[in-house]
Amino acid sequence: MDDPLPASLLRQFGHCPLLKIFHAVFYHHLHLATGQIDLNHLTELAIGHYVGKGLAELLAECPALEYLAIAGFQYSEVSVEGISKTLKAEISHAQLSTLHIGFIKEDFDDRAMEGVSLPGLQSLTLRAIPSIGDFLHPNQTRHGEFIVTLQAMLRRSNCNLQSLSLIRVQEEAAIALISGCPSISHLSCTETDISETLLAQLTLTEDSRVAPNLITLGMGSATVANSFLENCKAFEESCCRLVESRVYSTRLESAVIGDASQGLRRFLLRPLRPRDHPNLRDSTERIQSRLQSLGLKEVVVSVDFKWFNETMLDD
Image 1: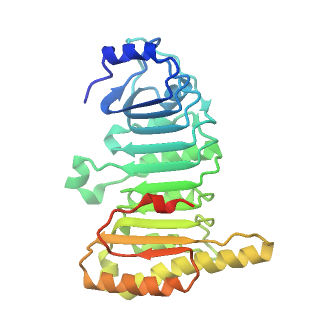
Image 2 (image 1 turned 90 degrees about the horizontal axis):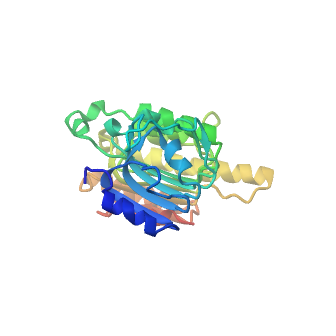
Image 3 (image 1 turned 180 degrees about the horizontal axis):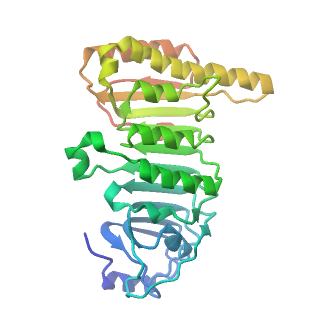
């Protein structure tokens, strides 16, 4: 629905003073109507679009919130009653541990994250929803502006982020975000091109330590770049070099400092498109065979027609 929450639904909040879970993803806009909605006890909120001055405004109304899923943000100086609202300039919300953002570039104002700090954030999912313009001009799709805003929020938060899931996020933006999250132990990139640049950036070297603490790395529902299909040996070597760097170098560091860390334990690769390409199928079989000898807990390299199973990222 493209309308704000109807008055009949808003009135029901008066009968639910201890409401903890509220999902309204099918309503296009959510305005906070002063005095009509008490969100003090809410721990889980999933909405379509939020209209206001920023997520700081929303989080201030939800002090107990632990999980937030949101698909859009529209900046507005006035409330639903037409009254200009005073917004606390900054908010540090320690309770929120899981944040899911699904955004269309045109529908998520960059000011959404201004003044927001989430020191307790553990899990972040970013889903880039294609707009009509993305389909018409796919090579012009850029998510960089929003990523910069998100990075600034993460720096302010100084959080110990553990899980990062990126869905359809443009490669350059994905690399920038991953590079700014050194604490993550679980990384999932789905519906994203598997390119030489992406694999090289994730390979640990003396000069590059991007996300050095990964335990699980998953790439599912992905498209293998044409350059890899033309030279599958390069694809194989890039995948194996990435995994080997995270198994051997981390184990060596652990032995030196007496840490029990085992480095990368799970590598999940499901390149679905073009799944019928014979070179790709042969390559994934060779990669699977080579990586099995490294002693990982789980190696899945397959071109089977399945969607990436995020439950496999669990410990």
